[in-house]
Amino acid sequence: MTMQTFTIPIQSYLKRRQLFAQHMQTGIAIIPTAPERIRNRDAHYPYRFDSYFYYLSGFSEPEAVLVIVAKTDKVPEKHILFCRAKDKEREIWDGYRYGPEAAKEAFNFDETYPVTQLDEILPTLLADQPVIYTALGHDSSWDQRIIRWMNQVRDQIRTGVTAPEKITDCRVIMDEMRLIKSSEELQVMQQAANISVQAHQRAMQITKPDKYEYEIEAELLYTFNRLGARFPAYTSIVAGGANACVLHYVDNTAELKSGDLLLIDAGCELHGYASDITRTFPINGKFSAAQKDVYQLVLNAQAAAIAQVKPGNLWNEPHQAALQVLAQGFIDLGLCHGSLDGVLESEDYKRFYMHRTGHWLGMDVHDAGQYKQRGAWRALQPGMVLTVEPGCYIRADDNVAEHFWNIGIRIEDDVVVTASNHNILTAAAPKTIADIEELMQ
Ligand code: GLY
Ligand code: MN
Ligand code: MN
Image (tube, rainbow, N blue to C red):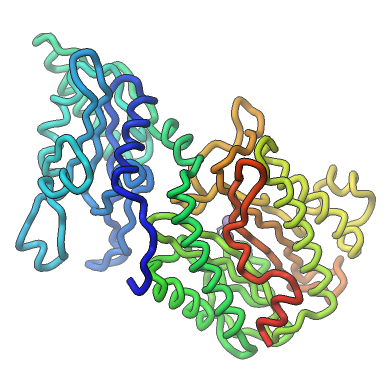
């Protein structure tokens, strides 16, 4: 790495496991990491661990399983890791692997075993446990494996052991833990945000008419990598002109045209944490009058939404604030007709704004955590991180004035709920009309 970045201390993963075990109260948790995935023939996708597994282990190798046994009056709490055995021959080909012995020390486990012993050891660990915590339904081959182990325990009940009676979703506990970020997590997320900010700045500076979308994508990926973030958190959207009105456009193959806008939705992943930024700017460096009108509207909607990000406000309040501003703006620009209440009621605004205003952000770009509790939007709490990303997408349409055609705009920032208000992790990415035009000069 060319840059020294803060990483979460190993001790913190141990604390997370202890907290998780407290929430379990009783039973055994089985949490495998993600499988390696083939792209084609012998070529793999770049490996990415499972977020839940990594959240509780800090261990990034594939073929690993975390087992946590909650404390009972008979046995102490136990944290167990199954991982790939040391293998000098494989390490020549694939590089270093910890192996159980070194992993035990390095990652604070009570016990570690080669993952090849999983089928042998797991049934003995399940004996006399009342409940299994696992992500049932996530991967059917794992579901079958767990049920097989349960049946092996059941086959022995005449020897006096009892088999688990219940399987519970371990993600419920972890979702709530992951939703509230620690100061260490926020530090990593700020670093990820800083790298993505630099990528967006560079993209603005390098964009010119007649370049291709993929040339700008290359600059984003170059900046991520150069600053130590080896992967984008999701496939970058680099969408010129009409392509910006395709919400999940990822072809990134078109030529950029003077007079069009360029929408870039791109963020890096750093140490397992995502950033997620969208900026929209004129390819030739100057907004047209119509582009200015729509851009300023979306920016105002974003400001109104961000102002609602504070502890105690409900999840939906930023979205509602953005909607009010956008719907009124659509009326003022002649895109929608009638009263504000009428447009909100009929949802006519959905012709131009059809998605929600944000999502939780963390290890996953659309991060863990419920948005509603018992049917009601949940209240924002310090440590929650969300995106605020209103937009406006106007396709060529006979019912719309032609100077608005193919204007697609989204402005997205990553926002932390703080004790008294909020903090914008991505605030340094230019977004006022004046700042963007100045940077692009
Ligand atoms: N980049 C994915 C999203 O904005 O939700
Ligand atoms: Mn987003
Ligand atoms: Mn995004």
